Length: 547
Image (cartoon, rainbow, N blue to C red; front, side, top):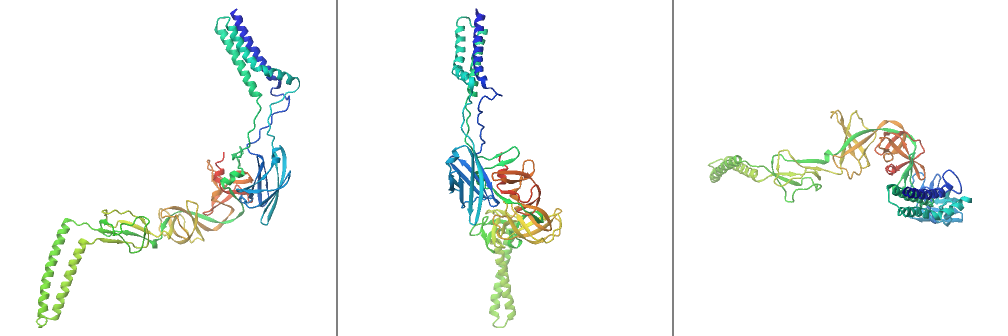
């Protein structure tokens, strides 16, 4: 009796499973019994694009509106003040400017299908006609339909699927109530419940109607390396392009250098003797303080040893004694001179001797009382030096360095003989380039190199002595190639130099290139791109980060 109960429970489970599986097998994979599910739309919203020699336009369907992005073809610069007329399925419409782009009401976008549009863009005296098309996908979704007898059977089986699963489990429990709960019986019941639940969930998943998300515009990189960047994101990236041109350019010589102060507009403040530093009445000038030539910057009081003090006092006593003797002699000579007892020259010599002794006595007092005065040798600003009151300065120690921040030079190192260049520029770390004037070069090797000095012309704010820079000298020979800005070349993780070509209004393609130095602003592309291509020159590093 007990084996029969276990067998009956297992039989119930198998029947429930077979019933569910039969209801699903009418439209299994590999057979076409009716219309297929709609294909999912791409991530991007429906759009169309067109280009002309002057402009490029991208139209994006968004809800019941059409967003229009108009840019310059050569530079990718947004055109914000154009007049745009659109020929739509419902007649001509004028686009309204809106925060850098344009928009029109487009209720006809709610119908799926193919839409042809004609854009007429007018900017000043320029007028371009740009036709484009937009394919609006069918966003409706429905469950797959069955036809003929399969539909009738499926309709009959669908209400019974949940009942079959529950019935198998309930019947198994009822059978268990009439016998002992042996492991074989329990296993059969568990099998029935699992098979029924699995079958029911599989049915629900297969027959659930697919849903389609709304289109989203985001930058992405395809498997072939092409980067899709929607126009709204291009505005955020600030992408700009140029049309490449081939030409001959002077070869550039690249030299490492650093900024130094003009030797004629800078100076050091040093101590002649060692001593203790003390501040002038206004205090020590701090870093960046403007000073004029001759301003008192500090005092140095030489230290006095005990033996020096004793010797000085002895010399002072001797001088005081000699002064006293000479004063008495002078007083006596002044009384005898009128009577002619002494010569007038003897009186004058005594006066001169007394003056000399007094001057020596005053000078000796100054040595003890007056410190050395440190003054500014040139006008400028305090570039270096932080003295502290009471600090002991060694002889020849540099207390201050003064420079003129407007007059700066560049000292570059060349490993080859360099004559007077035709032109020279310096490239700073922040990407600026400044013209240079050649001032001379050395004749003595410095670590197997020769120092070459230049003066910076024009505005040099932000530059400080000691900064490392790169100097480009224009040589006499020329090279042929395509000159592009430094910012357009990106060094990838594998060390390859690439540029991004603007192949379509919303697509950029990475192209490996071989480059050579040209000057502080440009590099020479000698292989990898052709003249007439559009290359990203601003925001290219952001394109490289798109994944």
